[in-house]
Length: 232
Image: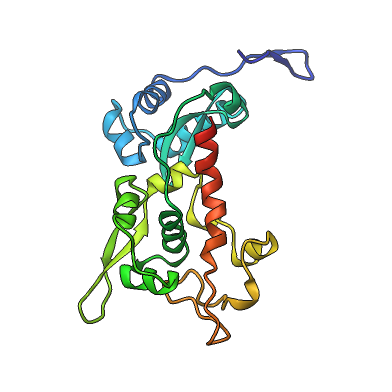
């Protein structure tokens, strides 16, 4: 409950109560099994309203509470406040973890999407192992993103909203840049052409006879989140 405040005229101001439509929107988002976009919320409430404006108001109302209203990839949901995450952890046994190949593959798709299976293999320097790409699709972190306009029209792969949600990203541009990865010591940025990195084109070495896989270190960034889940 918010504390009452006083104005300069010594008049007590109490926090304004939510209107009926604001309560409807709050309830719809709270009860949803998955994040909702604005159109879905509009279809569930009893009358027309500026849903975007109300969501922003509710987001502000919940900003200092144990539960926050967050928007990820234009979809809204309630989440436990990040500073309370330690209270929500529990010991559990993780039976299976992603292989290094799967994490490297995910890193390539993240930074080069849309990208084809052949391009992923070219970048990694090795052929796909059994079910490597399929595992990422089962997790719903990766999905087909159309076909490339070249002979054979191979399928291209991109990341999903579930990928953003799992790694707590608002949008793909929130990922570390080439310079940031280099500054963190995860990659050797001197061997990367910034103009093509993350554009769906192949990673090019400046030295033709040098074949270095920059993604063997980028996977540490993604794997840190998965390891933390295994320990919790």
